[in-house]
Image (tube, rainbow, N blue to C red):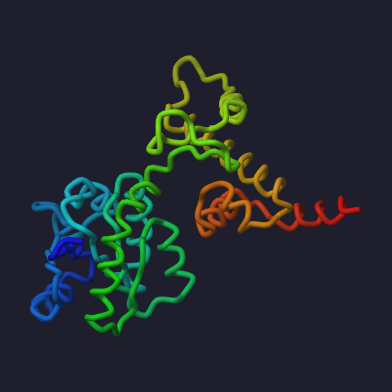
Length: 257
């Protein structure tokens, strides 16, 4: 851990003045943390405020910071959701949400979209500093999560290449996923690469989650652990593909002698 941490304070729509006042007031009292105001509105964009792609556009520049603070309230919730969704593939800097008058489902939704942690107002500076230190320590792990490398389904032997080698998807599983890419594009308008890739990835994710639940009798915790994924991320994939674990549990009970 470095002696001083650098934290980007993102000036999201509707929070610019409040966050500027907060930094000016509390920066001297926040030990070991340097706060940097980072505007999302680019010069010359007009009074309409930053669009939802602004955060994704800053992803590379935010890598210079240990973490970033993203204020969110009911009035800015829709903008924050869309911005996190647009930036999640590129944003490697851990995001701490400063939430104001937010419901638990809304906070959980933002965490699923890529935020690393949150702290609710009113908050004390000491609690904020502790959370920022934890995020700085977890930053390498969060970076690995954002890359989403293909994970081996069972606890298999580590592939050749040493302890740092990246896990590989089993060949038969990969072949099944690629087999789903069967389409006949029109001559004048072929299917875009991104759309085709998303369709294959969706099919692979769905098959993988179903197979994991089947092998573990519908036990979500064990299936997530064997898949090398956090249980919350595993649940998010289940919701994304409309997968219910109860049929796998009932099937396991019926097969018991």
